[in-house]
Amino acid sequence: MALRRSPQVRLRRTPGRVLPLTLAAVSVVALAPAASADRVRFTPGASGVGDAYFPLEGNGGYDAQHYNLDLKYDPDFDQLDGVVTITARATQNLSSFNLDLQGMDVARVKVDKKKASFKRRGQELTVTPRKGIRKGRIFKVSVTYGGVPQTIVGSPIVFGSPYGFLHTPDGAFVGAEPNGASTWFPSNDHPIDKARYDYTITVPKGLSAVTNGVLKSQKTQAVSFSRRRSATQASVFKWHEDSPMATYLTTLDIGKWTVRTGKTPLGTPNYTAVDPALIASQPNAVDFFFDTTNEATDLWTKTYGPYPFNTTGAIADDAQFNGQPLGFSLETQGKPVYSAVRNTLTIAHELAHQWFGDSVSVARWQDIWLNESFATWSHLWWVEKHGGATVADAVRATYNARPFPDPAGAPWWSVVIANPQRDTMFNNRVYNGGAMVLQFLRERIGDEKFFLLLRTWVKKYADKNVTTEQFTALANQVSGQDLTQFFKTWIYSPGKPPLP
Image 1 (cartoon, rainbow, N blue to C red):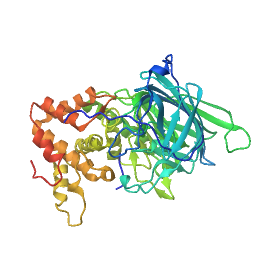
Image 2 (tube, helix red, strand yellow):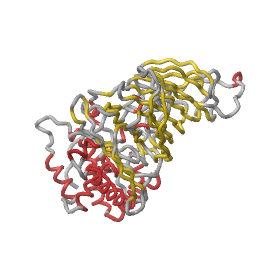
Image 3 (spheres, one colour):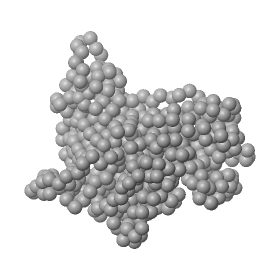
Image 4 (cartoon, rainbow, N blue to C red):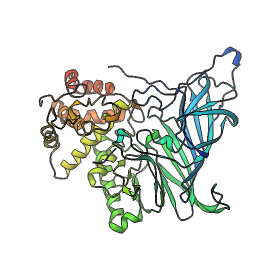
């Protein structure tokens, strides 16, 4: 994400809380025959996965495997209506389970096509099926809901920058990290529960919808939108993401787009969509995003290993909030989103995330440095490869520019990289301080083993969730060194250590 300027730990999954909605739906369907309930004890799934930073995010008792989002969005009324169907596997004998949903209005819920009862409290939507769901069983839950998705504003986590579902002059722009996915669809909203996605997005004719994955079809037909008196011509877009994806990496971008498609020189499909409003002020914007995306995708492919998804690309929107430009970009899976025309360094950063964060995803939000430090080191490497400052010089300049203690009271050196705390999880120390650590690690173990470590990391844990402890263990293994004190000094402790 780019904003304005020990042993493996397993998280528990748990059940839910909720906010306001209009008409959309989510469903879970059991495919195995029901066991006799009198011999089985069914209990509620937990209302959170046990993440210390976000105790209410995610839910326990099930593993989401697939989301089918069938959504209609009418920008004239800011109205989103939909039915979301989730295919899941029960990880315990469930009497009830939770989904995360902020705002919106829920009309009905079905489990395996049968009406289920539900209640809401805060962001938790608690679903109680007619019969208990036995552990190991595959089931489907569908939620019909609707309303005006609310933007998250004023959060100290992202330094007050609005995020989640953002309403634009011609549609919508979604950047959901860390907990904004539940502002627009019911979900198990934590990175630990990755799933595959299909989208059917219906918008008024003249607009287009771009999201994760590959565009499978588009057509025009008469559609009834809930806030309009009669049917109107609409465009229907179907997209498919076939790789497991964390909820915060989903996106929905609606508006008018100039699209360029093709392949990178190494053969990765590239789908780049740019808002014509950006092109009006920067006529080369489409080619700039397309060409830079090609270059960065292929550089990281050569550096870290095969591109992990079925497409690369960019979604660049003229996105504002209350008349003010948004200050962030985000590594949404397969096609990062940009709220304006950004520089090449930002594009390189967000595309490095496709390996570090998107394919290899954190198991706990406290491990966010495994995303941001690695993408930051990568964009510093990008600068060096393009004739700028070396990474070694860049990180030492950062080190020297940060006094300790800071006379202005800035918390830079007091932020612990491996556990930065929720409200400072996107602090600059996690970005540039973590990149500094990776560079010092590189200098200690040498280039050959450093790059082998990164390639091994992304290959071994592709499509999985990871912890800091797993990275440090792999670093010891690949380097053949005991790096315990190094990591204790640089990522587990506050303060400004002497240069190594």
